[in-house]
Length: 338
Image (cartoon, rainbow, N blue to C red; front, side, top):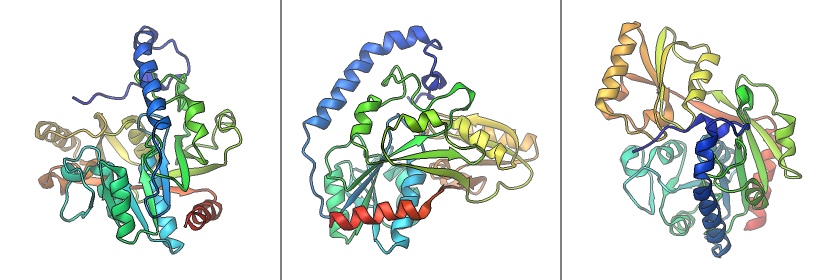
């Protein structure tokens, strides 16, 4: 059973859910130690093509996939044949295999690889080394590893971490710094930053500049600011939105900021498999407002085929403030790794 992401994870003040935080601390220590040992004991493998890792330090919700998608676009625009590589979370196939949007479903390969495959070559593999070698054999000039920061199996030409830069409403990207399950961190901040080459701070479309204190927390690492912008305007008229991502409340806010006439919104757990009864209820809810259903591209890819014509897919994209400088970093690391 999938659970909703607790919002108290992202509170800097440890008092919200303090008893639960305290009870979960021992499990957090075990998680952190296990992650550190696994990384320390693994010798990275050269896959035969430069690997750019796009990861994060928290359990979901930072915007890794839109950033990975933009990294691939920038590489391809610079003449580098970039291939995406994902674990294929949520899919039944182990790989390695190349994702074909017309042949594979989210149930086969996961929702994020399907999105990445819309733009160019994308692979899934439970065994990342095998997947990277398959991509290299197929002619990849660079491999963009989606969600790869805590996976030490591949030698990386560049390790990027994506950080949700929104700090409004008392939320902080790392909460109070607690490691899962007492907080959102996959590993302690200092440990994660030690393996990082650059940070991408991803801001909502309607936010100002990133918090100065947040930028200072990355010490001397290069920091690039990007914004998650609508790739298309929401359709006119009343809308009932829904999303099954790590932070569904951000989709609700983004739709409103983009001018959507949002009559209602339903949050679901991350990577939720939408049930027929849930979708029927949402459709009836939209009908009561004389409106339509709308969701994210990622969620739309998981809908049963007969529902897709009834739901609007709302695309967003990551856009870098200094695209030229970021592209220069990507291409320099790729060329130096060859």
